[in-house]
Amino acid sequence: MVLSTSYTILEHLLEGCQIIGFDWRYLFINKAAEVHNQRPRLELLEKVYTDMWPGIESTEVYAAIKGCLVERTPSRMENRFVFPDGTVGWFSLSIQPVPQGVFILSIDTTAQRKADEALKSSEQKFSILFEKAAFAATLSKLTDGKLVNVNEAFERSFGYTKREAIGKTTLELGINPDAEAWARFLAAIKETGSVRNQEMSLHTRAGELRFFSVNGELMDIDDEKYILNSSQDITERKRAEEEIVHHLQNVQALQKIDQAIAGSLDLNLTLSVVLEQTAAQLNADAVDVLLLNASSQMFEFAAGVGFRSRSIERSRLHLGEGHAGRAALERGTVAVVDLKENLTQFVRASLLVGEGFSSYFGTPLIAKGQVNGVLEVFMRSPLDPDDNWLGFFKVLAGQAAIAVDSASLFSETKRSNSLLFEAYNTTIEGWSHALDLRDKETEGHTLRVTEMAVRLTRAAKVSEEELVHIRRGALLHDIGKMGVPDHILLKPDKLTDEEWVLMKKHPVFAFDLLTPISYLRPALDIPYCHHEKWDGSGYPRGLKGEQIPLAARLFAVVDVWDALRSDRPYRKGWEMEKILEHIQTLSGTHFDPKAVELFIQVIAEDKDSA
Image (cartoon, rainbow, N blue to C red; front, side):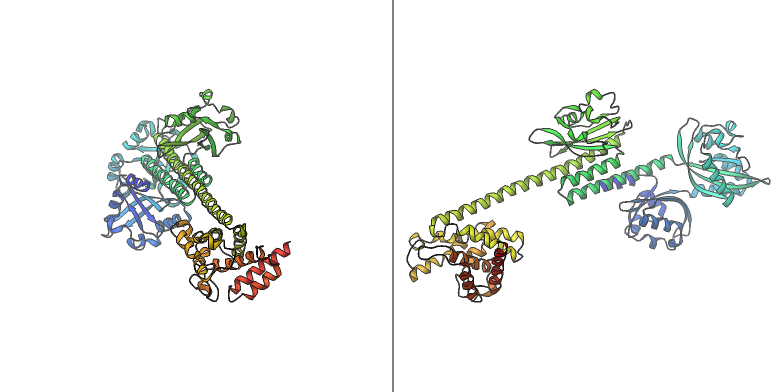
């Protein structure tokens, strides 16, 4: 959206404006540039620049564009173009780097060029065209630089009459106060016979500094050498050009902030980009952001650049307090051009000792109708900004507000997810504890096997994300026994065949119970499959080998290990050596051999660390 606004501004300029991408294709051509190119813009857009101008590779223009694309070096020049119909045109070009590639500003100087040539062609034409030329023209002696003639346009441009100017040099008149620049100009004319489009800053009689494009020609008149100068006022063009370049820099700054917001949810990182771009684009000496603390309802320092000390970090303001608090309360920009005159109103004056600030500007950060902070700018030199400066200040504050709002939303979402995650785990642990209380013989079994299952699966290089589901599955591995009647589950004697049929349904009961709960579906592998056996003789589905999920294969070893080491009414718990021997005898039948090998390795590590 910002970029399209930039193009709209360029479209209505009288100067030709073109943007060429890094691949040398035309990206934009305004109306004036369409006239300069003498081709419809639709014929040029997306076309390669060098294809449209055959032979351009050998010219100074090509070298300048290439240098700007590769080394980002700006340049200015006048160049001759031959159009498709064979006509010739001369253009003054300003080539500047922009985020999209290269920006070319073109001024048609064909008429001026022809006039210069006509001035030299005959005395009569010289006299007429010299006097009536639309651009300022002077004739001066090469020997001493004194003016021997000036035209009407010169009188209008610089405010000196012909009588006042003749017999004096431009240095004596104060038009060109830079003696060194003028000496270089004369040296170039003497060496080459002419100077084209030399940009100079010259003063009018009223003292106004204006910019001119100056051409100089060495002429022989009555066996004496003279310099014919023609000066075209390019002040408005230069200001427009600077405005365009500045605007494109603003676009680039906003793009960097957008990228920071889109690419990171780290508020500190994003704010550092916002502050860096704010300081650069507004030429600010120091910039900071105060954020609203939701708990205390105070605006507190969050980030800053350009301060000589860290005192500003103690900033804490109520809504409406001081300049920043007023900006937040009134939801508008507060500008203090002379801070010293308003120092009593600056409630944090003690924090600014040694900073030397002269001007202050604060504007609120507003997102979704809520004020969530204040962007502050400090200047050590007095500044009375124009509307463009203040407007872009507000745009930057808007970007900062979006960054703060996005980070806050992410932080709140993360906190809510954390609380929800904690609630899920607490609920699951409660369920597992209830199961242990129901079956006194296995009390504590669930937490023990869960801890060992997590260790074993971590040793198997399972991801941390998967470990969350494995831990939940281990805690709920016997949840299906809630569907088994107490007279079977708690029966002290051996189960009958009919009772075993019902007991073996508890993995299916677990599947039916947990499947409707979306966040527990990834944890189903252990509750549903931990009674499957490597040789396919397990239940409930008779899965074989690697058909059995890895988590269930690992957990099966852990479940038997804890059952054998625990005391039961009908037997004492086994010694570790005996348990390991027993588990190894079941490798390849009951258990996955690799799972057994990994389990023994984990147990051995426990012994070594003991």
